[in-house]
Length: 218
View 1 (cartoon, rainbow, N blue to C red):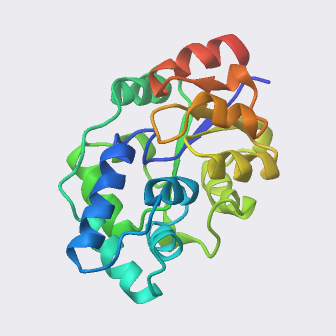
View 2: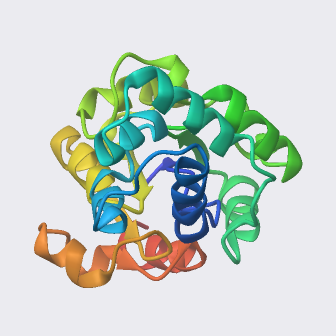
């Protein structure tokens, strides 16, 4: 079926924030006097895709309030660069392919809005933006898609979701939304294959998305 809409995660898909972002989180936690657990990068990787505060709480064993405070500082860091080709792809899908675009992210609005403004990205999504503040569920709960599907005015069979973590994959799979996994986050191809992602649905980056759509969903 030809798709009408593309729903995208933000960090690791559009914003090139994962590797550097993970190191910044570890740096901020350490600078605040908290112990850095062994294998922290592996633990953070497993929780990457949850809200930043929840990832901190689980990975570092911090209390919820401290996790929220540190995640807020992380979110206020100077905006990072976009993934190479991201802006061009969004423009192609929105204005040439005439597709609806939705943004589904675990960032909160105070962290997200300055980055969207800095990179002039709001024009691609309009009101079809859903962040942590907007819904009571977090990925991998498949109900995270309920609101964004309504905002876009499409059914789950008329869209695809682009994410960069196994958590993204699980949420989309359980909602029965076709999911594309990009390798610009913190997970590699073999990790996606191991959880059941189809090989053809693993692409190097969002820059390869128009070609995937032309090949598989037109």
